[in-house]
Length: 305
Ligand code: GDP
Ligand code: ZN
Image (cartoon, rainbow, N blue to C red):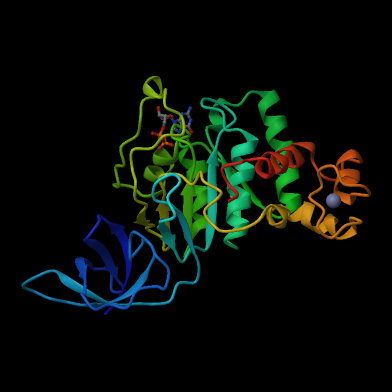
């Protein structure tokens, strides 16, 4: 029987079978694992073959090769990685320009990370019920900027059911990863999309720890109209894949495109002569905020080994 891992709790896995039933599984002892060292052999989103047992835990007997996956370091500075989720169709960063305001730096890191994993990505600006006219005009500018680069930009409010309703079309029959700082309304949005789910939501006054998360595993939720949401505890580290500084610009599509015209083919677009990227920034063809966030990744000592 085929199924999808929707929750992992260490040694046990919740699997949704293709017929809609859910079973708790363990892994068969001699299962062949993926060929890199991960602290967890199975991740949310993995497609698996299951041998059903009536008297005991069912067994995962096979993992279907992953279309893609995202990993993070299991502990800071450790080489060991944890697979957060697999087989993702699109990744959305839930952001908000109000309370707690999401920085463009965080958004750009998220988008670049998605590029590194070749996962189509987008931004969902939440809490639009609180936007002033000034904020709306900024959101419209950002929408133009990011759709121009090729990212989906959505605006919603967890408090307005008709806005949440519009999101269903974007998520239908897809596996969508949701990420974001705590407090942006991710749980409220997912609750709005899946009636009866009842995820715990936080009270803003207790939100002193922006960006910290208590959940350590991703979890998958089934959308009533078809498709899945993967709720992640946050993807913050960018240094999880081995890459070098010259590759960072590959994950900023509009910078990468222009970089073909730089004089040096190993140009980092920092202080080199005849840099087409710097010219484009000066002429406004590349947004200053994107360029600055590119530089901040480039200068992040923690990322590169
Ligand atoms: P999470 O940490 O991202 O899962 O955020 P929660 O869903 O727990 O929401 C954090 C706080 O923001 C709660 O107090 C929610 O009531 C509030 N909230 C969530 N979505 C919205 C929204 O669209 N508009 C407004 N005004 N508040 C929201
Ligand atoms: Zn350059």
